[in-house]
Length: 392
Image (cartoon, rainbow, N blue to C red):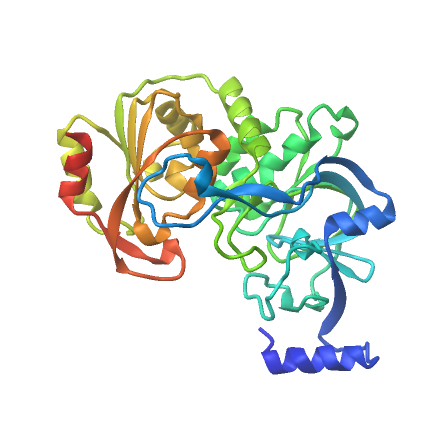
């Protein structure tokens, strides 16, 4: 990782006209939409409002929809475009074209404050005007055409579903692109759940090209469906919860329900964390709920289709916030859903899934024991009496 001092020196030298750096290339920043608009390669725009209703982060311990909880937040256009002669990298969220580094976080109405961004392995530094990118030492693979479904963190089932596959909704009824292969991160399909989900969603039988993490590829014609999920990263105004466009939720729900045949029905279910140690007293919670007639479902011992049976049929579902609860979007309207989550993290993507899929749920507040800035590195404890108060 380049230091801030090195990055500032590179940007200064670039500004005064020096271009030939040994290890870096400096690109100008632009959104994919703005770039394609100038190239006259925006195919279709679905939503150009540049704002989207988002839940305001406030003091709450349960989920209840109400108008006062929402505000319009900065967002990006929803669109489909074509980027010609694009360079992409596996598991990364940016595209290189001509002298530009493209990412919709660079929309003119959304300010990017990042200088050093450790999320990107190939990007060294980002400002509002420039991006410093490591020169790739890997062999450059040429791809004739493809649909851009490459995404950071796509090994995670939530991110693969909403950040990658849901974007195929922007190609619905556009048969002329059925022959375009889907460009998918290899790490995504290494996850068996993601592999099963891909088989369900890929109804048009797009060929699949697997993209290796961090490797460099040049795509002659890159079909770019825009993002449909906005997180709480540095590019978004603070104070808003993540949000997911309803188009993404609708697409996933309709395709999964149409493709899945239920083989087993459930009444009361507890979704365990499996081998994850996020909930410190999970065994205590599991033992108690099992005595109350709950089926205990371990994600590490269940297939993705097993999970679909659970969420599509159960009447009561309790689970710990995280990937295991992503499929609550598939529950029937009468289902009662509880999510165990510390108060400090009740702004997480569970809120976004509930809003986008119009599913109501209730948080059960757990107590933080080890706190990190991100949920997956934190641990918490749930007093047994809080579970008892909910189900009795």
